Image (tube, rainbow, N blue to C red; front, side, top):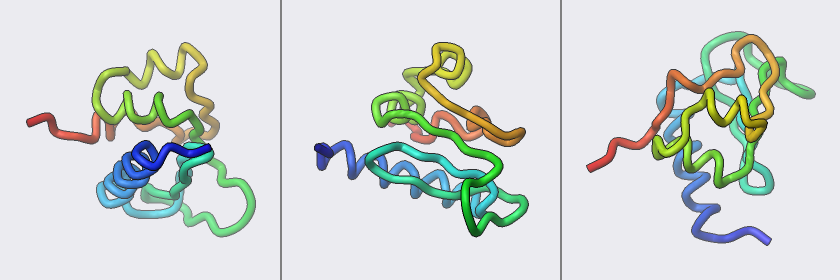
Length: 98
């Protein structure tokens, strides 16, 4: 069952990611909440993209807030990433703390 607060945060932060890096070369999946394509490069239209990143919502939100480093999450197995461009470290954290 999806938590509506988590759903809203995941969708809002994924929208921020796509606004910072428009395109369709990389796919980020946060099941069961959402998935987006972003990033400059070859446009992907069918099947599984060449560059895929998947993680749970808690991991995603911790990365977005800067509470978790990309490298730590990747090394711990909290992120599944495939493809040469499947690295979000340049975009994280997404939120600017007040």
